[in-house]
Image (cartoon, rainbow, N blue to C red; front, side, top):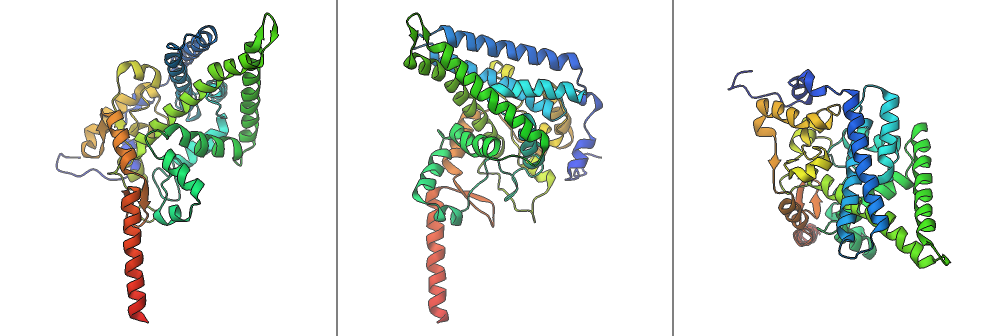
Length: 364
């Protein structure tokens, strides 16, 4: 392809330019990352168990949430077949790595690999941070409207993920796979067992079992790290695919190239955070090909940029972009994919209703 030729807008053409080295995934490297991350997670749990100093606890909850996220990325790559060539090794490491985030390995893989990656930012396709139309919102009752306004605010990223993705997609829904039900049972047993053990042993005192102490340990060691993790994953997925400049498209206009290249944003974050998040913010290469291990995502991005420079969206203002997008992206016009605030959407809707009424009057 010469400098004057426009690259083909197909996903297969992007994949063709990726080098073989981008897919190298030696077993020892995946195992070392897994052991490193599980070590940090254990350290975070020990510190939370032993420390009650009020001004240290928020930092420890933050740290625990980050270590859960690190393990999740390892499980995420294992489920994509990116981290190990051996499927059994990928399953067991992925299963263990996902347990602290209370995700069932094959249950999660069904929704993420097949649906999210297969239909990224497609209306009526992608279920992760799926937008609501004005007409749908108007039909909501007062409680659903209130939830939507909270979940789609800057403070609702974790709440949205907890309810719409984890509770509905991981607990209430069961994927049509034998392995999904098995893994969901494993996850639920782990959730109840770990929560119960923290409550019981945390409540043991020299004078016997104390309910309030047990509840405090459950909240401190088990619940708040899980909530912190939900905020990390919720805001991360949000910034990858939600921007005022990125309209979602219906199946008649959507293409795999559009979803993975146009609808996926790359963020450069500080090293200290990337140490735990494993390059997952370099996100479009991962959507181009799921089998690229996380430690090769920067290399893959460089290869894609060499051929598709105008198609790659790169940002280094994660926090600024998140607050900007959550202030602008509330409801969507499915006919155009345009994002709107509640005020813009409802004003447009009222104007359209008035126009329709006028035309109806003229017609009669």
